[in-house]
Image (cartoon, rainbow, N blue to C red; front, side, top):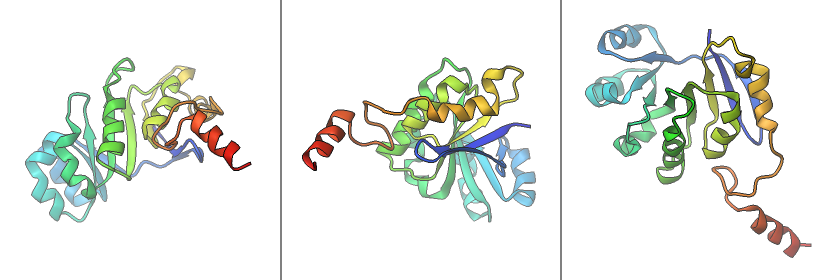
Length: 181
């Protein structure tokens, strides 16, 4: 079973139960509407079944693929408790850009989840652009172990650049601290 890790850079991470069911087609949607409490749908399914999904008494999430444009859901963000962004390969960095756009340009404040080929070495940088949960695929490698992923939250103690959670670069934070002394 896949492991779900949630948390922020400030709070650290923890393993939690994944209550979300991913729905990729109309047949799965019919079953999910009667049995699930929280579903994640693809962008295409959302666009096709938007009215049906809005009438359902479910918590809604959406999964964006690397080629999906987050502008397509910008007006609908209030309907989603979760946005999952797929990383089909660890070398495909488009998900970082999508995450940053969703958080900073469109102001999404709900759960932002990385799914797919998410590796331990990427976790810290994903946290910096706004991800706060990671659905880890089953792997045999130690690189993907839960303990290794949780340790990624502590990789660096100081960040020079701005990020989703840190709005000022280090030199401005230091200058502000020096001005108050």
